[in-house]
Image 1 (cartoon, helix red, strand yellow):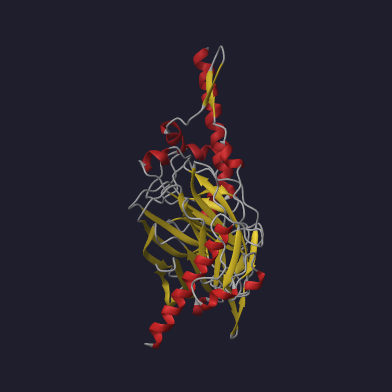
Image 2: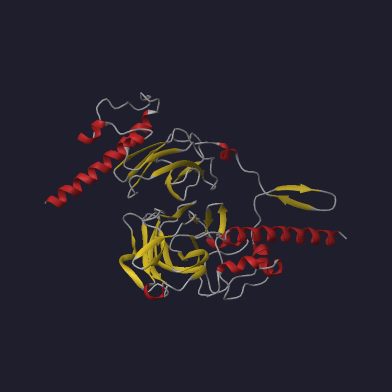
Length: 427
C-alpha cells in the first residue's frame, strides 16, 4: 500500500510539472505581429503548432521534425539552455504575422554583449533573396547583429503565421554567470527593426508589437547537468529526449523536507531576502546619440552584477545589458535622437536572483535638458569639470556625488573618443 501511495504521489508530481511545462510553452507563442527567437530548426513546420500538443505528447520523444521554443523567463523574456565557454548558440530569427501579409522588406538589428558572445555566421532565408550589402553581418565593436533583405518579385504573395527570416550562430567566448541578453534594437518605423509592405513605389511600415529579449544563460560547471534539471532542452539538436526521461534524470533541487506517517516529499525553496532589495538613485543623461546611466551600488555582500533595462515604452524594457557588481554606470550609444528612453536597474546575486526594479528614469536622446542629471556646461570645454563634487558628498540636486562623477566620467570618455576620431579624420 505504501509503495502504491508513493507511486501516486510521483505520478501527480510529474503531471503538475508537465502541466507547468505546457503552459510555459504556450505562453512563449507571440500573438501579434512581432519578432522572436527560437532554437534553430530545419523543419518547415510552424513552431507555433507545438503549443497544440496534448498532455500525453509531453511524455513522448519529440519527433525529429518538431520545432521547439525557448523557455519563458518572464512575460517579456525568453531564456536559453545553460551554456558554457565555447558552446554554440544556434537560433532562428522568426517573424510572427497576426494575419496574412504581403511582406516586402524586413530589417532586424539585435544587440548583444561582444565581450561574452562572438558572432559566427548569419544566413538569411531563401524567401528573402535580395539582401542589403553590409547588413547581413555582425558588428563586434558596437555589439550588433545586422540583417536586412527584401522579397522583391514575390512581395505580392502574402506570408502568414511564423516565418523564418534568418539563422544566427554565435559562440560563447566567456561564460560569466548568470548570463547576458540579446535584444532587438530600435524598434520603430524608419528605425533599425522594421517590417514593410509595398504598394507601387511606396513602402508602408507594419505596426509591430515590441518584441521581447532572449536571456542567454551561462554556467561555470557542467552545463549538461544544469540542463537536465529543465523540463525540456532548449538548444537545438537533431533529436530531443522525452520529458519523462529528463524529469527522472534531473538532479534533486535544494528543498525543505516534509514528513508524514505514510510519505516524504519536498517543497521548492523560498526565495531569499535579496529579491526584496532595490537599487537606488538611478540617474540618466544624454549627449548626441548616447545614453549615460549611473546608480548607487547595492550594499549587499551577495551582489554579483547589475541588469540595466531600457526601452521606449514605460514599464516595458525590451533591451537589457549586464555589468559586473564593481561597475555602477553604463553608456549606450547609437540610439535614435528624439526618442524617449526609460531605464530601470536590478541587482543580481551569485545564484541568479534579481532584486526588484529600481524607480524608473527617463530621458530624450540628444536632449540634455531632459536629463535627470544634466551634463555640466563646462564638460564641453575639457575632461575635468570645475567645482566637481568630492567623493562621498552630495550634489546640489541631492544626488550622491559618486553617481554624478560616474555620469561625468562616462560623458567625458565619449567626448574624448569623438575628439580623437575628428582629429584622425582631419589628419
